[in-house]
Amino acid sequence: MISDIKQELLNNPDKIRELLEIYDFHNISIKHNYISFGRSEDSRKDAIAIFLKDNSYLNVKDFSRNEHGDIFSYIARTKGTNFADVLFTAKNVLGITETSFHKRREVFGGFYSGINKIQTEVEQNLIDESFLNRFDTIPNLRFIQDRISISTQAKYKIGYSWLDNAITIPMRDCEGRLIGIKGRKNYECDEDKYFYIKPCRCSYNLFGYSENYSEMYESDVIILESEKSVMQLDSYEIYNSVALGSGSISEIQVKLIYELNPKRIILMHDVGYKKELVNSNLRKLAKYSRLKNTEILYWNNFDKNYPDKISPTDLGKEFFLKSFSMEIENYISED
Image (cartoon, rainbow, N blue to C red; front, top):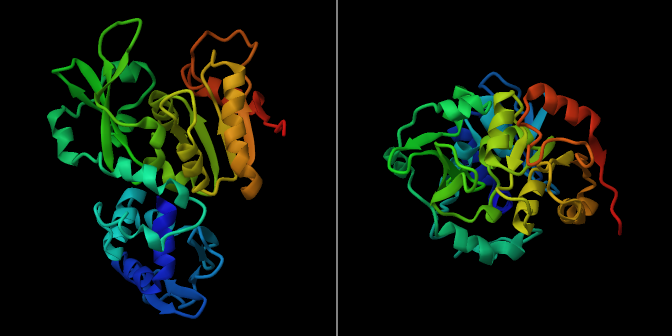
């Protein structure tokens, strides 16, 4: 997972220097307990720092601009690139390939090491990006009518399969690598609107994670059920959300959320999802919040007479913002 890559960088400060040099940072100096650097040749040598001790999230502190973030989100934001590209570059710097990563996992440890065996299975299901060339990358009117903008469709590389008569939704892992294709039938049907053109295990991943990583890191994280909901929020210019791909949250998904070091986690299930199942998901999230002191909240849509099965994003931006401001409640653990 991402935490493993951060630990490998911390173990090898010279690799952090190499990564910073690739992205054109200057005056890089490795000290005993920290690395200092600047944005340009004229910058102060101590303008920005990465501490090498007690910094498992690999956070960067930019003193000159009063900015901070983990190394991946900081580079992506300041250099105008994206999280997935920075992470890919970091793995190249470390010499990590898809086949070597888990052979070297004995160097990794810490909070998330217990799921390495499961993650290995996911690594074997990567799909080359060229697979998307099978589909037309054109905006879809059905999605526009569903409040998903053309720019959002482009961001998530929404396409169209003429063979399946379906809209195509690329599914990605936490690092932004293609792992599956979900289809949405482009005709009226009451059941099974969504299906897998190329199957993947959604419970190992979170839709929107890599695309929205920089916006979510050390911020609020909104958890939704469906990919459509994340794309609707993106169209409303709200970029700090992910989707489970189902109603239940897995242990791996919970751990991915906490790798973001979030301030608050807001669970927003569709209307009609049973209260006891919502509480089950909240308990899973709260299990880790005790270690991180993270606030857990949820959308209390119970007994509100909302239409069944609507998501908090289905009725437009105004409805979402109203629900978010008036119907979000703190989860109080029963333990």
